[in-house]
Length: 438
Ligand code: CTP
Image (cartoon, rainbow, N blue to C red):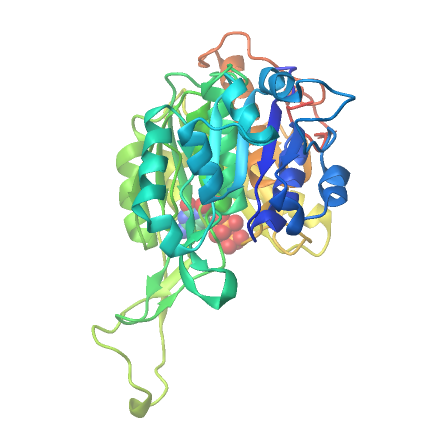
């Protein structure tokens, strides 16, 4: 790709403005250049210094800066994407009405880049017909609106209106970029991928289950990344999270349901990625009514679940690529490597993605991850701490390279960025933190 995506980050005056600092950091870590534009009211909630320390470009606030005449047209032309997070009801109204009273609104009118608006406000305001009509109008003009989430709002109220989760915003940004200026290669065009995500839940009785701490974030990021790069993706997930447009979602709960879904889909798949944390054991005889405390402590007998990945390995098609995960809690990094390699061989995988789930910032529930990729030749690629979407990018890069080496890739000449060379030789290769957006 070579080109770092250029993002204008508009910050309005709402309590969620404090999250813009973290959002800015995530976008920069994902390899983007970020030029923040703050409205006057945004300064009431967030210090300019905070944003300028995190962004790659200077923070701008005024239409009337003498050092930089007509900043709005410059910014509008510079941007690959304009992101407004948080967007207040006032900003949405002004943008829908074509007003340009400050630098941010003027930039919105002066750009031809895709625009992504992330509203955040109180539920009553969000649901007001004026706001809803303005949002509908913006959408009808091709503006992407990332709906607010439900949860705690300012003042302790609970409702819909909270700024969408930051990883979801980062994903939406990269999808919009890939749909726009071709910033992301469609190097999986026409390929069929099956991806699994989340931890399975094995019922003990109708209200209880044995589960694990997997959030599904890494599997979802993989599915979203593959879809952004042109693949037909089916995501078999327990996570109940939204997936990117174009990803077909199959919701499951137990290992058995996941097995049925995956095995029925795998026959047609070019690539299967098992990112799910599938339970290894389940209660042998789940109760059909709630276990009662008054009836004493139950003895629960467990039985093994089917090993989905091992079954896939046994029936793998000649051109199919099988990617497994190995979540470990190793005593030393060598243990993790050995364990992961043993899994790769045992389950006949082409690639294993190993992670130490106890490492800081990695594994279950985090938005970031640290992984080690090992292929069937024993070649390794170490991926340092980065956003799960960026980890997904490196995993998908590797899949594309492996497929093109086998002659099964969509793109006969995939782009390899400096520092993410194909896994071909024995030995560890370090992936730089900013992944492919160098
Ligand atoms: N997996 C699977 N079916 C299972 C258990 C695991 O398909 N019943 C898959 C996971 O999705 C993952 C890989 O196998 O891609 C490795 O899972 P992991 O739990 O790390 O390994 P196990 O095979 O369960 O081995 P161990 O418990 O000894 O670590």
